[in-house]
Length: 91
Image (cartoon, rainbow, N blue to C red; front, side):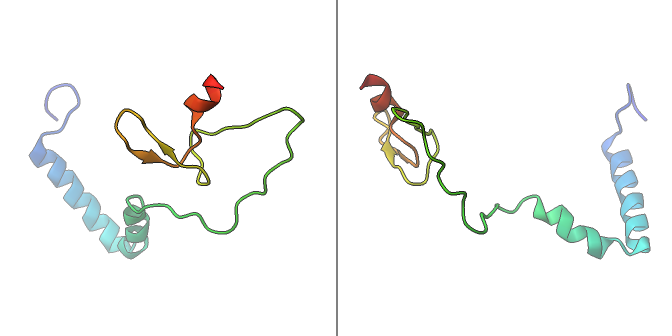
């Protein structure tokens, strides 16, 4: 160890090599590979969403993220999947 509890690059590489050797010897590498690689993959929504719940009378609900609505940002012209919250606040 060097300094206050940090490892040098060579020491870190040595520790990682020893760890990988033990993991490989135990035969866990094929089991751990999908788990370690799955962290970088994009998520997917599977199945059907929840049905809309009934709202009380005179009650409106708007979202900053919604697949059924499109909003064009007046500052940069970009499109987003959401309700136009500015319009709802003004009206």
